[in-house]
Image 1: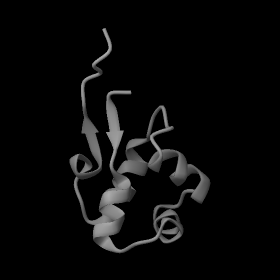
Image 2: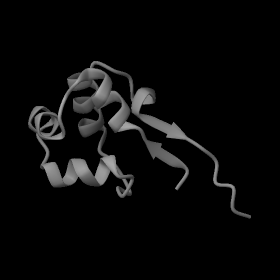
Image 3: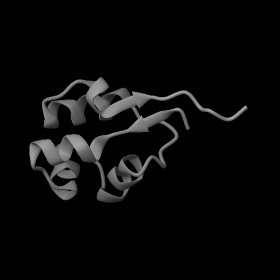
Image 4: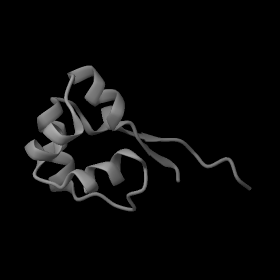
Length: 71
């Protein structure tokens, strides 16, 4: 997938656990894990907004586009 989720990096910078972030955002730890491990196919803007608010960051701090190299 061309979109990479770098949530682990921002969580480490902010020294916040997955459980605490899930609580602050209002999602289950299982859903946060799916997002963290690049298994999610989509994310709601409301969830992305809540993550950015909880981590005091911009969407670009946790989402990265890398073109697929497969031809």
